[in-house]
Image (tube, rainbow over all chains, first blue to last red; front, side):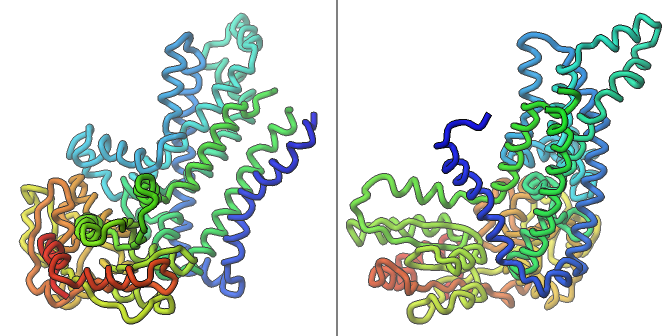
Amino acid sequence: MTGPRWLAPLAALGGLLVLLPLLGLVARVEWTDLWSLVTSQESLTALGLSLRTAAVATLATLALGVPLGFVLHGMRGPVRGLVRAVVLAPLVLPPVVGGLALLYAFGRRGLLGEELGGSVAFTTLAVVIAQTFVAMPFMVVSVESALAARSGRHEAIAGTLGASRTRVLTRVTLPALAPALATGAVLAFARALGEFGATLTFAGSLEGVTRTAPLEIYLVRETDPAAAAALSLVLVAVAIGVVALAYRPLRGAA
Amino acid sequence: MRGGAGPLAVAGSVAALALSLTACTNGSADRGAASLAPGSEDTTLWVLAAASLTEVLEEIAEGFEADHPGVDVVGNYAGSSDLAAQLLEGAPADVFISADEANMDKVEGLVAGTPTVVATNTLTIVVPEGNRAGVAGLADLADDAVVTVVCAPQVPCGAATAALAAGAGVTLSPASEEQNVTDVLGKVSAGQADAGIVYVTDVARGYGVEAVPIDGAGSVVNRYPAAALTRAAQPALAQEFVAYLGGPEAQAVLAAAGFGAP
């Protein structure tokens, strides 16, 4: 289906809206210094911290988001819609609101109290919590929609053959969900890598501890726009690569 | 479809991408739009000013508007380096007031005449109400047990903090180096940090915080230069506004907010 011809100019405008800012960024990159800017000690520290925290956050979304997807799928009626809306809220919350919410829950004066909150404040753990908070909806949504697309027939057969529910989960359902889990994980990783507002509000900004690549970009743009553009280019490349990777299985299945 | 991501996931990821791209905005655009709505026949004077001037400049603008019927002063507030960057990218404005001389120097080519220093500011320690950590001075902030938050040395308030600490022979061990003074204040008023270093005038802006003065704070003074811009749509009015900032009425407002005289 190609649609009427008048869609084309609007599509071109839409494409330009996305493409022009990216081109603008690329135009500001000083290519001769790119390598030295990206490999400066501050950039490498920030990139390394970003990769490590995003990887841990992705594992956390697997450990927590997959069960959430299952439970959500098992719910019925208006409760399901309500729970889904709450679980997916971090997707649409302004990042600074997410950061404040995390602060009021896990901060020193938060719901968890002084002791626990004090041990999280300004640590790398706070960064991982913020990233998991914003990235988990991707995993939940991936799992839930993949489960909805399954008939449950294989699970029923395995059950009649005497398999326990845990065995059905690990031997039948999870292997069948592998593509959805991969998509969810890749998107969660990308979202965690790009996390900015909640980290800034909740975790702070200290080199090697909480200053991830987006925070480093935000800071160096004050003094060194060339370094900010170079580091931005790296994140744009990672983002595009990750999204391309994540949607490959979808194209094959459609 | 077999196990792939559903359309909901696609929509969700698009939304999230859009969000992360808009993560870094400030409220200045809203402010401008809101002030534009009524009295669009008025002459509008666009002032880009350092975020620390937000409250005082609104008050000063009211006085200026009272003296100049039909003139509407619209303030656009952000970090001075953000404003300087916006000016260099071609943002239209009549007047620029920076929180430091370095950012005024960046836009030198866009300034009509010479910038005038209209206010000064010094640093202070700020602690959550009650001062639980018992901070008495700069030396206490070298203690790792006192969770301290400062501005990063790359931004003006951080550069001033570093200069002050070096002058006092204190090695700070901050838990976080924030991007701007508002974020430092936020961490202290949220109780996340036991102490922060901000400008004297910021204390009144903070919620649930109190100041602990720094001995010798006067050795590092931050100057606020103001200048009319060459691309001003209202060049004469812009010059008048800069002159008004140095006059007795505006200076009284600045002094009441804790700013030092130029």
